[in-house]
View 1 (cartoon, helix red, strand yellow):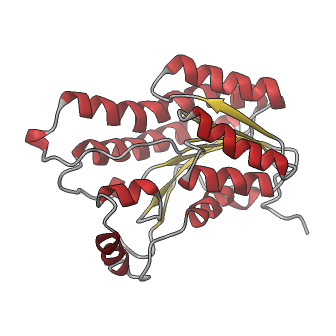
View 2 (view 1 turned 60 degrees about the horizontal axis):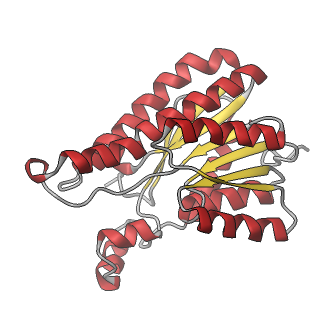
Length: 255
């Protein structure tokens, strides 16, 4: 029986790959046999992580990329294809959290920063990934949204708006490109144990633990649990899944 999560001979691209969910997903793709391009704006960090994977025998490429810069995004995809010959799967994960402020007290600079990375960065990444996948006649893209795409949250309006936008963009692209053999989906992570999640409470471990205990499953999620969902959505096992935003949140949005 063929393992649907075997990515041997495939090529994957992950943005925001220097840490957290991006790094866990890049590692999971590599462990599943894929050649992986790890992209991040933190050049030193992404090179270090790629070197670790290479030392373990994986085919990897580290790319310095700020996804809010269209030129860098185009070059990211071009470098991936030049190195590995194709692009089969992409996880558009790069994102930032908004600085907490009520809507009337937020700034244009903060709005542009969050939207530029979280939403325009996903649009730009998809734009060049889709063009390559169209040439191949196949591919799968997963965009990282959030449970914030399903609700509101006081104080982080730009973040919530960006994640609602990611889901809308995902659904639209899914309808546009399924005819070309390309599936586009998203994941909606809940509270995941990443540095960004801890930064929301300014590193207050007690506050973070209290939030985690309020999740129905009684803990924060692990980045590897998001990686598992992404790999499945990119696999033949999810071949009939199109334009879906898969919520992976330990029950947060059930109650």
